[in-house]
Length: 257
Length: 166
Image (cartoon, rainbow over all chains, first blue to last red):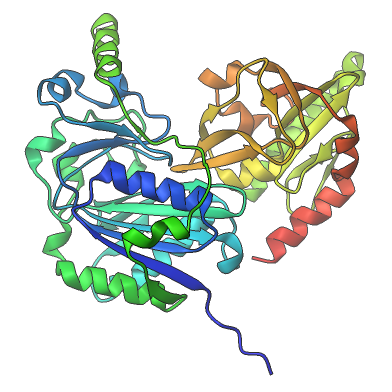
């Protein structure tokens, strides 16, 4: 008789790690490791704007205030939209070998359905949670933004959870041209909600780890030990935008105005 | 979604079939049971890219099965002309449904043309995966690599088995 064992998932717990560093780590683990990873980062150090792979600052940001207030802007290696994150944001990232999650096809909607089901366990008993047009919502208010990257035999699904947010920071973001249907014409403050109004922070983290642990055998790994898991060169596409790029974006916004 | 894709594929095929004067460009098509179209005359990789080899040029794109599973493509990242591609290594990416997905080259060679229309119209990959949605044209460095790719029947079966397994 053979007993199938759950695949291994390495768990890395971070606190206040700069989001650029977190994204660099994730891209490295996706491309240069063959293990499964769950990364939880409890907040990032400074407010930072993070755009998806195809994001254009002139279209997505109020570039003038971003430059004036020296808000860092990152372009990440995954798809999806733009967020502004800070110390109150909670980040959970899942990197998986497709063969270790055999019920999931390596395509966006299949991965999203799987993650939606996983977080359904986390938020069991919390009214109104659902995956709605690729966002995590309570009712019709978004509290978690998702993005993914799918490579040959692996994929990452990562989420920034709006535990709390500063309304003033939302003013750096324009209303994107492509929005989910359920958003209707609501501005940021009417569209999003604070996760802290629904669940305790530590409760969320531990329930997430438990939900992942229902499908994988979890092993905690310290950040200092990562080098032994991810060796060799890899494509690095996550980067901080330069001041020149932001100034060019501002100039192009002014020209088209 | 599957029925719309079947209809779209059929419409494309009918449109192709009606242009008899361009028959040298119009391979026949077949419809797999998974409702994605698979064109005759092309070779297919198990990562769902297709290759049309004509003389010294190979055109590469992604299959109807792939575009259907990816969802609406909103952005495409492609290599530059004169760069090189390597069999089974990624040469670009598409973005759809908040995900970037790698595109893997089925053959090795030099990129001689890139479909610049995809910059403004990435949705061509969805609406016309085998025609207007082509991605790159390559001068193959090792045409023998084509022999290891799947033909239409084999690829159809591959797609069906892949979908059935999930």
